[in-house]
Length: 471
Ligand code: 5AD
Ligand code: SF4
Image (cartoon, protein in one colour):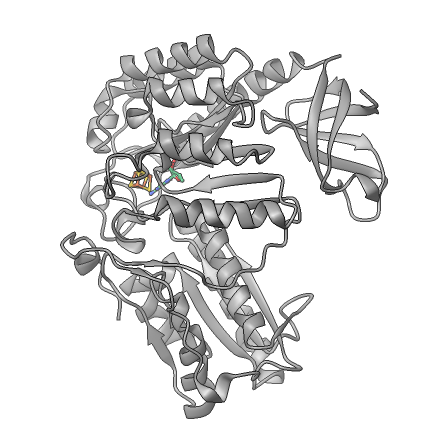
C-alpha cells in the first residue's frame, strides 16, 4: 500500500538501473493476438511514463487498440494534481464495471500519480473491485510480473513503492509523435510547495546522467526526430544531485551541440532561472524562444504560504531581463486561483503581474485541496463564487493578451513543425511555430513532420492562420 508520509522522506541514495525490465517466462509473447489501450492524463512526465507502459505492452506482444471498449488490457495512467482529474478517472472506472460484465477477461490497471495516494487506493480496493492492478510511479518496470500475477494467479495486485525512487534506463517506449519527442532529464521534486502532491507521488529529485540523455537524443535524431522537449518538474534544477559540471546550462549547450533542429524544455521554476540560462538560449538558435515560467500568484504573502521562496520583484526583473535579451520570446505561466485565504489585495497583486507581463498564455486553475499536503490543513474562507469570479476575470485577461501577442505575427513569415491535419480528414493542417503558437494552413500529407515556412494572414487568441511559402 502507498504511504504519503513515507514518500515525504529524503534519505536514500539514488541508483541508476540499466536492466530493470524482467519478463516472467509465462509473459514472453503473452500479448500476441491481444490488444492494449493506455489512457494518459496530466503532465509531460506522465506522458513519458505512458509511452514506457505502451513500450512494455508491445514488448510482450500486445498491439495498440483503437479504443478501450474491446481491448484486452486497459491501463489508466492517472494524474493527481487536481480533484477534477481524479474524478474523471473514477467516472471512467464506473463505466468499466459495465464493460467488464460483457468482457470478463479484460484486465484493468491504474498507474500514475493516483496510484501513490493511499486514500485513492483504499477507495479502489473497496468500491472498484473490477480493477485488477495498481502500479506505482516507481514501479513501471514491474508491469510484466504484475500482469503475470493478475492473469495466472487471479490476484488483485497493488505494486506501489513509497520511497524517493531510482532512475531506470532503457525501458522500451512508443512515441506516437513522428517528428518530436519528450526526453526525461530528471524525475521527482524536492520543492514541497504546500499545495502540491507531486513531491509525494514522484519522489525526490533524481537527474539522469548527461551521457545517457545525450545518447537518447542522438538516437532520436537518427530516427528522424526534429524536436525534443527536455522534461522535469524543475528542469532548471537539473543536476543538483550530480557533479558540478552536470548542470542545466551545460546540458542545454550539449543538447544544442547535437544540432537537433528544435529544443524545448519544461517545466522551469522561476526562482532558479539564472541569467546563464537566458544567455545559453540566446546563443543557440535551436533552443526555442518559448518559456513557461509558473509563478502561481503575484502576491508575495501567498507565495510564502505556498512555500515558494521568490521575491515578486525578482520575478519582474527576470521577465524584464528575458524580454530584453530574447526580444522574440513568448512567455506563459501557471496561476492558482483561490489559494486558502487569498485576499482581494493578494488577488490584485496577481492581476497587476498579469497586466505587466502580458503573457502569451496562462494555465489557470482553481486551488484544489490535496489530502496529505500542508495546505490541506489551512483554513479557507474564500467562497466558491469568489474563486469562480476571479477565474472568469483572469480568463478575460488571458484572452486579451493572447490575442494582442498573436497580432505581432500578422504578415510575418514563420517556421512551423507540421504535426498533421487540423481535423481528421481535412486539408487544413497544423503545426507549431518556434514560440509554440498553433498555425493552421492549407497543406497535404507530405508536409507532416516537416519544418516549413508559412506567411501569417489571420490571427485569433488561440491560433494563427497562414499560407505556405517557398522561401
Ligand atoms: N490545485 C490547483 N492547481 C495546482 N497545481 C498544482 N497543484 C495544484 C493544486 N493543489 C497547478 C500549479 C502547477 C500546475 C502543474 O498545476 O499551477 O504549476
Ligand atoms: Fe509541485 Fe512546486 Fe514541485 Fe512544481 S515545484 S511539482 S508545483 S512542489
